[in-house]
Length: 295
Image (cartoon, rainbow, N blue to C red; front, side, top):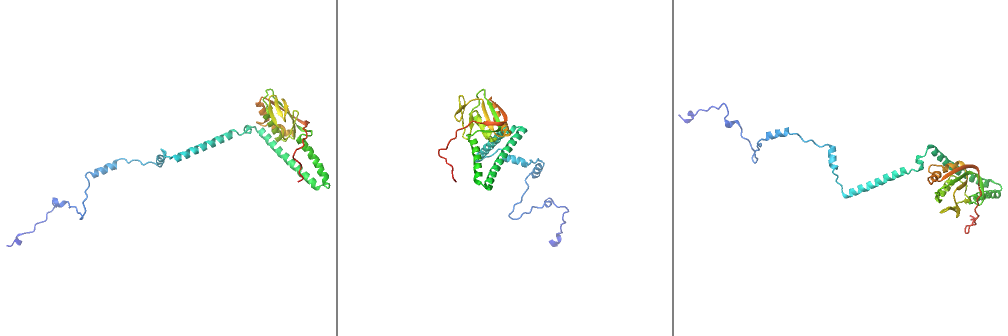
């Protein structure tokens, strides 16, 4: 018989062989097969079990960005200048607050009296304004304007004579007596007193036997004070014509004349009167160069 009758087909095995159990890896041409490194599953498990580091908060990142400071020279210079400017402003505000003046700690009744004095000054200015307006109206409406003008001129002459100290004056006012046993009162204290009285509306003033006018001056000497070149010694007596209700409070305001004299160990006594006579006169001087203008 021929060989093809002698060969019988072999039966297929029921279970795959050891070589047939795992298929061979398929690779594309030109590529390399990747294999897992040894121990990779164990490393991944350890990484999963390891604690995760906490992320910094926004405040921590801000602090880390600001500290330690990183400033340039220009920034440091600007910072120093701003510090000096702020310090100067603070000192100025503090000084202004501390030097608020004697009225800062004044009592309510003192403040009311000062306000009343200011109102009285305003009232005097209003009265003077109305008087001038009345004179103008009289001149414009008078049938005999020449006679009316002469009358007002004589009245004005009397007023100017009082201001210039060439005529005597009388009226209500006060007498201020300054006693200075220790010789602490100087020319500047008397000048301050005079200025305070003028501001309160004094119209005529006499110190001892010297008539006070617009160009009166004071100077210190060994024996007292010179007023317009005349020696004057304590006690200093001021005869002042004006409204007593305005003059006396002006001297007694907090930090005013009376308190200043007390610091110099001097005393000031104020007496009101309805008739004060100012009779010290000054000679009438003719100007050397000034002449009345026709314009």
